Length: 138
Image 1 (tube, one colour):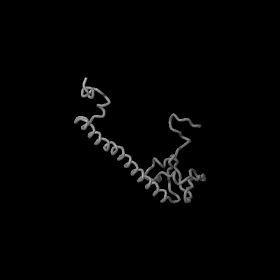
Image 2 (tube, one colour):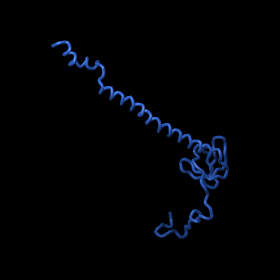
Image 3 (cartoon, one colour):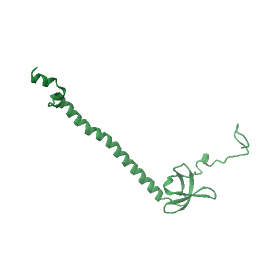
Image 4 (tube, helix red, strand yellow):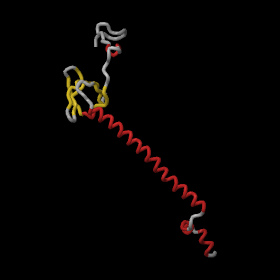
């Protein structure tokens, strides 16, 4: 065999040979797809961080605007009335005469109180006449 023939059949030599037109097309496609892939991963991350920052600004504004007597809901779902405020804590009245101290960071939202126009929210439970099918003693 001649030297030229052996060169074409040697796999190590073929890897080191210059790329053909077909290889260049694949390489240029990969060069275009890689930046698009990076962009596709970074854009949603950037938008998520931006949205989270806006939500944090709203929560901070709410916590700074708290006043004594406001009805609030905590991140745990506890509904209470603001009884006292400090720099980083808030005293919440969860029942008449029961006041607990919480971090201001747990206040999620201000809750609207029931109004006389909404009789379902102001309805009193009559323990003497329970609804049908309910026990009278607990």
